[in-house]
Length: 415
Ligand SMILES: Nc1nc2c(ncn2[C@@H]2O[C@H](COP(=O)(O)OP(=O)(O)O)[C@@H](O)[C@H]2O)c(=O)[nH]1
Ligand SMILES: *[C@@H]1O[C@H](CO)[C@@H](O)[C@H](O)[C@H]1NC(C)=O
Ligand SMILES: *[C@@H]1O[C@H](CO)[C@@H](O)[C@H](O)[C@H]1NC(C)=O
Ligand SMILES: *[C@@H]1O[C@H](CO)[C@@H](O)[C@H](O)[C@H]1NC(C)=O
Ligand SMILES: [Mg+2]
Image (cartoon, helix red, strand yellow):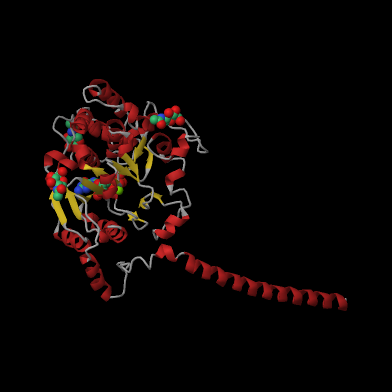
């Protein structure tokens, strides 16, 4: 009994000795590892290339603001494109607007100082104007939308409209009972680009309240649009709720039949296959619940960078007016996301649409965060790339369809 106890003691002692030495090796290993990390990422930090300050609004250094001013006057400050950041927003959303601005300014615009343009169906109040002007690094524009570009048109049958609101409410369709949401969707589909305040610009970058940009922008998206001749840029593509657009696709097919030749549409070189391909592939066996030949894929338009001249074109205006006359913005609840997507996929060459792979972004409930470890480090990303809210390769994302049928990833097409 005694020797058994003694043995046990010995075993314990030797085990804890072993544990202590292991622990010591581990610490050594760790510090060596972290030393390696420190030096191997020096190139990413670009300390030797640029001395410029990483200004963030939570800085405690008063002097930082002075340095930032110097940086802005630096003659090497990047060239600006003919573009504006654009937000349609309500006065009471001011905090959400500031949150989005803070994020985009720090991650991108503080180096470029692009103008901000704010649109509203009622006049902006003083609090909104002062707070957003203070937050912006560039000039700010505020414009009120004319009633005829916003309100429900007179030719809409109010009785039928009322019934539709009622029915969609009963079916629990998101914003199904909202009149103003319909005005907003119609405005964003057919009128935003006709606002006088935008006449001075070629490109817009749509921003919504309460969104977040997770990474430093590695480039100016406007410059990419201009130099690569892109007309529409997106980051997230998902499936639309069919209940909001029951007759949209048949209207689009009718438009193609009636106007296609006259407008010289070239569906073979467009992204038509992106919106009509139903093939299930990869590991995501997602059954698309569509009753038409439209697979319901749409670019999530709360983020978009676009060429205003595309919307101003005869093609787009004809497309919009044709659909508007159907009344679906009110009798159904057509969103601007499927409208922009269908237009871009039918009216443009597929190479004129770009997926901005490097931009981390969130509009609840979905986000996109770069999967590449290197990219996340080099762009100082702060986002969780795992989990199902990072939609890119989840079942409800259309991104793999874009890779396959857009101008996207070649290797997927070669499978
Ligand atoms: N001025 C104004 N902006 C609106 C109105 N309704 C929506 N918006 C804006 O339109 C965009 C989309 O609306 P939001 O409520 O975010 O819809 P969701 O993103 O589809 O859930 C946001 O930028 C809103 O601020 C409205 O009645 N008036
Ligand atoms: C539609 O509904 C509104 C508000 O509920 C009501 O004021 C209006 O009279 C209704 N119009 C018709 C034609 O039913
Ligand atoms: C910017 O774009 C608008 C609209 O296309 C155009 O009228 C204007 O001349 C452009 N400005 C510059 C400086 O190129
Ligand atoms: C789209 O994808 C389908 C299915 O993989 C393929 O047959 C078709 O050729 C693709 N179209 C384009 C334009 O890439
Ligand atoms: Mg929103």
